Every structure is written in C-alpha cells, then in structure tokens.
Image 1 (tube, rainbow, N blue to C red):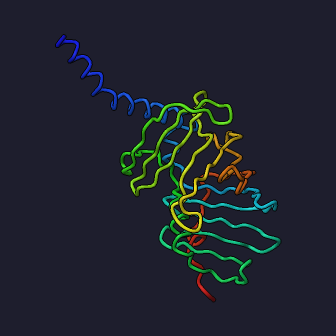
Image 2 (cartoon, rainbow, N blue to C red; image 1 turned 30 degrees about the vertical axis):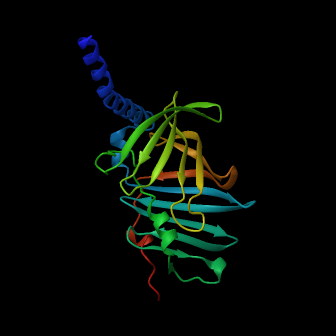
Length: 240
C-alpha cells in the first residue's frame, strides 16, 4: 500500500514537468517545420507588401520590421499615405484622413498596443523573456485539430495560440484588447496559406475577427527577408 502511495505521488508531482516537456516539444516542432530555430534567431528584418481589406475597401500596404522592436506600416489610401510606426521608443503616426500630413505621437493606448508587437516570436527562448507557456489540451478550429497553448507574457498579457496537430503551424490566436475603446474585447486572428519564403514557412493570409465579425483581412503578396533597412525609416520625422 505504501509503495502504491509513493508511486501515485510521483505521478502527481511529475505532471507539471511532463506538460512543460510536451509544450516545448510542440514549440520545437513548430520552429523546425517553419524554418529552424537558429534561422529564426538570425532573421534581422522583413519587408512585406500586402493588400489590406477593411470595411469593404481595399488598400495596398507595405510593412517594415526590424530587430529588436522597430515597425512601420504604410497604407496607400487613394494616393494618400497613412503611416504607423515605432522606433522602439516612440510610436508615431501620419493620418491624412484626419486632415494632417505631419507626424504625430500616437495616443498612449494605441501606442501601447502597437509597441506590443515584437519582431521576434514570443515563443523563441520564452523563459529568458520571463514568459510562461502551458498546454491547455486540444481544440478544433475550423475543422482542424489543434494544440491549444496558453502564453502568459511577462507584462501580464495572455494569449492563446492554436497549433495544427499535423503540421505544427499556428492557424489562430486569440487575445483580449488591453487598451483603448475596444478594451476587454476578444480578437481572434486566423493565419493560413503557408508558403515557403527563403527557407521559412510564412502565412500569406491573415484575418482578424471580433464577435464573429471580420475587422481586417491581409493578403501578403511579397516578402523580402534580411534586407537592409535604415533606422531612419522608423524614426519620428523631423520637421523641415
């Protein structure tokens, strides 16, 4: 009887370790199937040309990103350039639809949301970043069986990522809007049409939904990886 009790205790106390190992195995397969962890760590920049669809309208867009946390999106709206960018310290925007062509510092809530978007996957060396991950079981997303992985970021944000159990790629992730007028609302982002780009498997289609309604669609038409991008692209523009 005593021997049996020790066996049961050993099983109970080993469960967290087994779960953590399972999560790490899934993440290892994800990185292996999408380009290799070392290659992801060495990726320094991305230039992406895309087509954006929102509110029944379609616009061309260019997205630049560079380590460690520089981002810039330029959207062509009937010949006018809307820009949202951060140099890693200051988030800024140009919004001609609001009657101005000068760069403005982003409102705090929008800036925080924009700056949350890191160049490197949060799952790469997640322990060193202070994040926690856990396997929450399996769920079906649009008929596809997925591993449901919970990501608890160091800053307190929580996301759920759904990895296809066959190919180990992310087909959907969900998060709660932390700031702004939509604070507290859940947004689901679907990823599909994975294609090979310079040795990496990249999704070429993304759709974001809230309450079942589509907020935005992005079709990624061209990728350029590790292209030299000058830091001035992301810097707050100086007035002439």
